[in-house]
Amino acid sequence: MMRRRRLGCTTFNLWLRRDAVGYGCHMGELRLFAIGIDEARDMFAAPPELAERLRVAAAPLFPPPAHRRRRRDLLGPLVRTSLLPPGDVPLPGDAEHLLAGRFVTPDRITAAWILVEHWLTELSWGTYTTSLTRGELDAWDFDLARAGMSSTYAIGRLFNEELGFPVRPLPDQQTGYIRHSQVLNADAALTLCLEQLSGDPAVRTQNLLGWLDSYPGWAEAADTAHRPRPDLIGLLSW
Image (cartoon, rainbow, N blue to C red):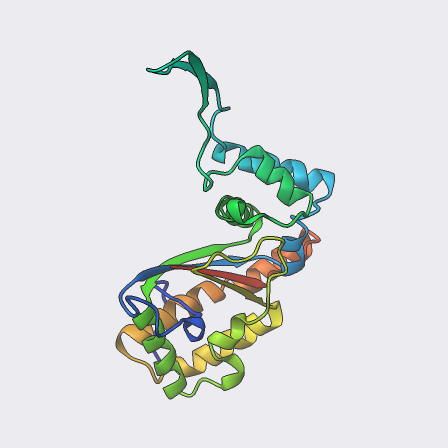
């Protein structure tokens, strides 16, 4: 049996549109977060102590306060112009909007997701990020199925549950989560498949298993800290 080691993993391929322009070539980024889904949802309408922690964590993301400057129009009197950050730059108001549990307007979704991912990283027991093309995602999933992966734990099905956050996914983003018990079951199923894999699919599976191996330790730490045992939240962006 091939020894486990951390290399590169991914998921979500069953969610991808095969008719998309550049299918198979465009690089995507998958981010995994080990955190209880209920704990993650508590970021929205957060209690005072948690809200303050998240404000402090978000502060480095904010631009300096916008200043108005005066300039002379070539054809007339002085006019005022505003130096406002673009819509993908988080602002303190975006953070307060999320912390209050309000739904995010379309023009602030990108900025909101920057904050949400930053907060997930702040609160998670562990995270993982990897880059992969759509074609590589599909090939890896196909080889897992051929190796005997049960349909119960098919990669695409593991992330069908909606996050329930007040910010909807971006146009080229997929999101989802699985519960702690499902993470452990998926770990066992992938381990059984590993012996049937070789080459690149084996490398990807090794990496995923290497990351999942940390869950028992994180669960013990969560019990000690009186926190929920970590589920798995996944975000895939193209």
